[in-house]
Length: 405
Image (tube, rainbow, N blue to C red):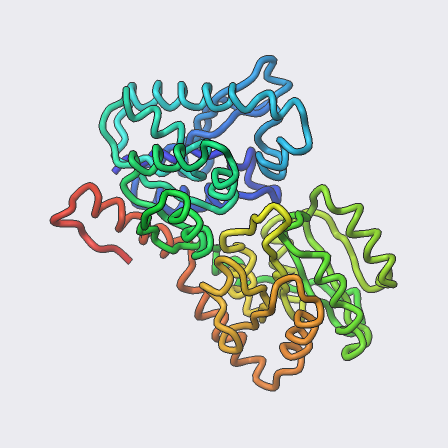
């Protein structure tokens, strides 16, 4: 089977901490199929290279190439909000991506095209399908793409156009799938499937030495409004009242860092909160194995957007770390309250603090850790890839699809 994965979220190299979930899926699929990724170019990036088992092709979308800045920021949407140059590059990106897809699909045969993000990738695939060899289109939606279409004046028409040229849908979380259903006015029959984790990597790691005498809570991810970090900071004084010496470590980066640092200082948390920057997978594992608790305080932000299912939930569970997460979008698809973790109300620092204290105080902490590990095992990349392949096989051979995983 030959699989083509168009995406705008793809690492330039594998050692950094930049979001690599599409690569991890592609690499897992490549153990049983031939996988090619089509991703945007960047200054200094090769037009074609092998990244592990994955054949990566990159296209240029603006001239001069040194000015390309729409992709490889925190996200394409954030790039557009932060840079006038990025906004200018939107139409050239869509045109260049569609041409690259048409060229690739006309030269080579692919059985399945698995686009990641409904726009711009799903839209480009839908347009390219008119002039290319036949293929099955499987769309993976991750949240921001669907929320963006939900706001655009012609978003519903675009969504319907894409869905008419889509054979199956994978959704990161139930909220984003429901949003898509409302957008197109019909059930998408989207398959709920969060992105996965390298379970063995996160299960086995050495631990850093805690910089706080009472241990620490851990957040890792982008510093964006939808991550809800401000509510975690507001919850910390109540947590510290119950657990003196407890600290908070924030791993990541983003446009809100300066504001979050200022808020931590205003709350009197300068000595209790550490911003340690971006970390790679190995380093994150070391922090996870040292922390008392991982916190994922995601929210529906002021633009009405939230996440799909944050991969940090699975990664923390794989490390056997109890997780407190908000009851939004895909998080309750994975966390069962007081069974394998704790759910709190979004944007409620009092409730968040209460759940953190409850998790830290629970006498059955080891049972929670074990259930978390068991949950994570179902989301190992090998199993996620098998679920994708099962759908691909069913589309290609509807009467005699072989089941995998």
